[in-house]
Image 1 (cartoon, helix red, strand yellow):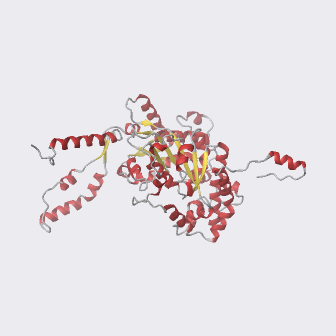
Image 2 (cartoon, rainbow, N blue to C red):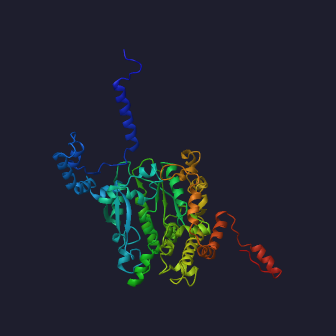
Image 3 (spheres, rainbow, N blue to C red):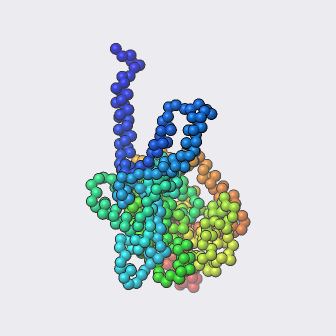
Length: 489
């Protein structure tokens, strides 16, 4: 008779098989098995060798020489990938993800005549756009958003992106994937709706917000700063494209409506996922994409968005923190050729301006754009940087309409964004980030921010708090009657 402390061997097998089935079920479908890394036979032979040559023996040095000779080839072979289907199938079945889009500067122009009528698919001439795809592991981001907060971080962690990306014509692959979706019989990939967009002024605590959104639920796919979304939103605004248009003397006008169509196709590809648990898609874009908020609203008329902004001193301090040369900050990248929106807002702005003044004016332009779009469409919400975590629950439920938020959220969802790279929760993380922003704020920068940015900041505060004052017509006519016209702001 068996002792009570002895477990029959077949029970270990049953438990092990059950555990394997559970784990397999959780990951079932995320990978098709049509793309996998090659295993170098010679490396495997060395690793599986049971006899280790004695140190300094002829056999030892012979093995070391062979390993050194094969070092480069082993490294190369170890990053090679093998695929059992063609590129189009691999992309359309969702095995690889779009990570880069490159369009000619006039791809979305309004062209007269035959060219415009020949445009197919998206509103832009996306047959001239090149799209790059590679295999990404989104489980890395879901498990450790603090380590892999952005799409670029996932690209950097992918051996496939580094060695074997797939580049195709964008319009062709969009059309092929739409056909694939119509005829496919498998449940995956499935499409998830775009639930919201996160924008920011730059170097705010928006990353803590998106980290928390990622950690909050396996149902959320959060793409942070995907370059293809930026490309589509800024086709008509991108600084480099504007400069090239001027140099090449391009006379046609960029169509924002066509840019919106291009954006729809980009988001279509991102909305297709092989993760059955995912139910919704969130996007976060780089600060410069704020100028394309109207493009986003045209493309997605029912999708809400938020704009994260900072206090005046923190806003400009964040632009120059950690930089040896402030003149290389992102806020002054367009100084040689300021955008028309900035020229209209601040007449006379130009290359002769100081770095501090131009940086502050650039921030004011972005904030003004977000403020105006919020008032015009009513779909945006302005959130101060320090409040991104404390207001996250309200943002998810009331702004992004995530009805099952409470079911997925832990007791204190705000702490999800306070996890540091080492995996620890730092309740003072936002305070430390604020101190870092203020560390290099000189009097010159503080005065510049107060001069150009503070006014817009105060308008955002009023609108964000719901206390913006509207024009009081009754008071106006009453004052008119007594000869004291003092319209309220």
